[in-house]
Amino acid sequence: MNFASDNWAGATPEVMAALGRHNEGFAPGYGSDALTEKVRGMFCEVFERDVEVWFTPTGTASNALGLSAVSRPGGMVLCSAEAHIHNDEWGATEYASGGMKLMPMAHRDGLVLGDALEAMLARYPEGNRLGQLVALSLTNATELGTVYGPDALAALTAPARARGLAVHLDGARFANAVAASGATPAELTWRAGVDFMSFGGTKNGCWAAEAVVVFAPEKLHDVMARRQRAGHTFSKARFVAAQFEAYLSDGNWLAWAGHANAMAERLRAGLRQRETARLGWDNTANEVFAVISAEALDAVRAAGGTAHEWPSETVTPAAGEVLVRLVTSWATTPEDVDRFLKLV
Image (cartoon, rainbow, N blue to C red; front, side, top):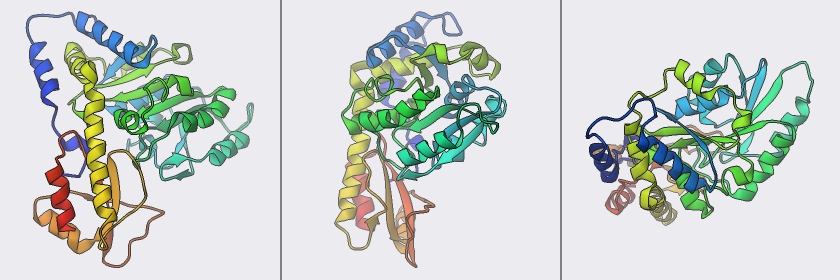
């Protein structure tokens, strides 16, 4: 009954088996092994085109490394006010980029509002003396569990690209977005105007497998050198490749994300039926935000369950209530969900 985070779940049996399988013998280091090249080909198949793939150890490393590669003096990155790069990464992008500024924008349940983007583009025209807009960063699935479809993405990326901005996608829970939307990975990335992305595996069954996937290498500068200088180049890259091999084989990544999404929907359905709890907002990925009584949260914790109280500017719990975030994973069971619902 652990709903603290999908980061708390372990690695899947398939990932662990792949790590053991590829632990035999010797292999060239620093990504020059055959397995890493095979996995790059698997990424190309997933995205239906040739892509660059740069392994990193964490999602924060992917975000900071990728965005640093589009940096310019006085550069500014537009993002949601809920963006992980803005709220949770301790200034990693600013640090890695040599001081680029993150510019938060208004959103609705995590989804950037088109009017907010247009206002930013108008406020900082080309050649202004205040700074240079260099990138738009979007998150899919968002930090609030909502999902952009292809049309919604394209509506935001088109005006940004028209101004010459590079478009970054934080895909820490990209698998959940693909599974929830029914769109293809290509439709949710380069076909919708995304130039590069942070591709996450850790939240969905891996234990240290993240990557920067680049669709428009001409827009990024010196990714290899930046990764090396930041200390994010794996010497034994085959062990990251092994995880991605298991992850992408046989559609595992979407099956695991689909299960997590289904468990979240089971939670939402159960909460909708209760008079003692309510949803904070509707969403479709594997994060559920619910208002429950503080007493119920105490009961969950007393029973060994885990859930985090969550701040929100749009949901105000009544006296004696709390807003909690409930995150499901590949390892969440229907019994976990039903037990939680019984306690609340």
